[in-house]
Length: 273
Image (cartoon, rainbow, N blue to C red; front, side, top):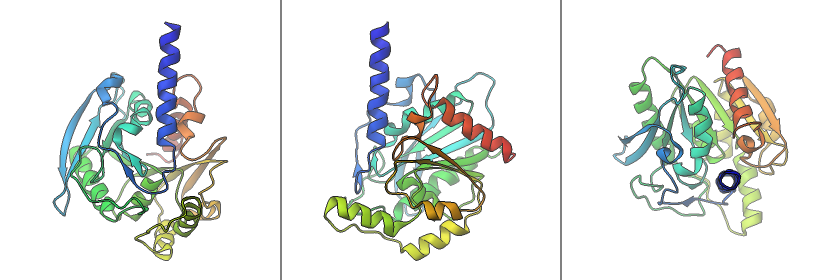
């Protein structure tokens, strides 16, 4: 029994480390490492069409606690590598706390429709179209519920560039300065990185955004511009001892991500969401 527990913890840690990697450019993976039911999570799979007629695949994970559906949906916008299976361990503690969780794959990732990708691109504007399509689908499906977004690394860029209304934002390893990230990655990679939006346009959007937001930031994260984070409106900042996208792992006490989710719940209660 103890051996199985150690193996399970090691497997979780492997996935945490995989999803916390800064890939220095896009690294889509088609194959799913697992599906929600692999973790005992009840879910349905949806197919969603974007406004430019691309087909996306989404997993709608049900609240996993009987009679504790808190009528709040969290849509996940993940980082620049892998696919939605790589954030399943991050979705699980939210589902177990009574949240609906919606995951999706950007075009070219997972089982979503193929899309030619230059790995030296930081992101594609088309991912915002994908995000908007899934957000619209989710809000139509759960008309009576609050809908917020968990975004990680590249996903924070996508959520920021979207003009669609949400009730709150969980920003994990918030990319706040595109030029800073570009320069940092180019030094490490030794190649030019393509960024499809200007820093001026992005900074205007990020500083204008007044959505209630909780920002998780690692003290050892080297690609985050903390100066801009200090200027964000309507925010709560949670710092932890760790690096990029390691918040769930580091904010764990008894079960994976339990302290992290408790901080989100406290934030939503304070904001009356």
